[in-house]
Length: 342
Image (cartoon, rainbow, N blue to C red; front, side, top):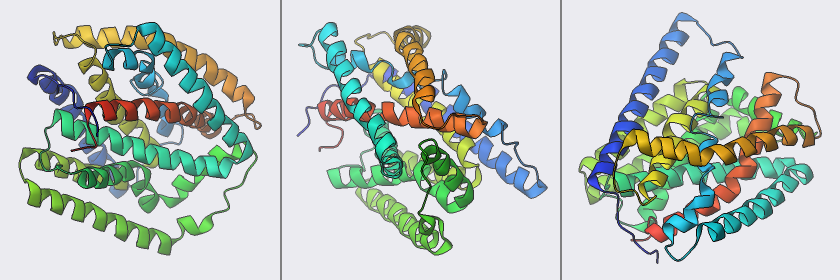
């Protein structure tokens, strides 16, 4: 059973609504309209421009959002010092991240599959926290329903693009394993039959999860959940994967986590500029260090990246290595806050 802590104050919830919901909804909707109109007019985005959202994530919330993990234990646990917090998280990142980096060298296909699974779980995890804590989604009144919602929410960015853009999805994953001299020998995964069956099952899971939630409590929380789910379905079905993932990473997942972190930093005054400025200062040292390690990682991989696609692959694999220990930190936060236990 998790230990439930105080929920954010109304002022922090208003900050969340102002920064992390309405702007993200608007931006995603605009991308859906733009992608749809562009397709009707036969306009395509150049391959280079597709990487811009990912490039922006280096500094715009994406990479930095996990760069304050070293402070989290001390802020959640009053009995832990900042030094102890830094040591524990540092060991976690070195051990777990190092082991995962080794897996990419030894078994890149397995590592790529694990990356998709971890991100599926983690992005669903982030949305469930936001719904439970910031939105007061009363319909998520059981552990099973929260788990089902996490499965759906995580699958929207990680699975839906495969349904609409199988060739581009495959190209991205091939670039990951190609860095380590491996081939993507899972053609069946991208076959039309597989996508049809998988898409039908996932759509059914989406509808059933929302229907069960509606029967529990069809109030504002459910309407937010259903509206966001529908929007993300459209977003990932229409916007090219690299663009969609880059945009989602920056303005949806990472920003929500940033607000979560600043809401537990002990500052009762909700001064948005002050809080985000503080977060930026605290995240800057490890973000800069991560960029140094990123350069070293690019040298470390067996195949030298020479194209935008391979450079993006290096960045994404590096993010994968950082994501696994980050998920451990966030899961510990979830347990302390009672996110998955009712």
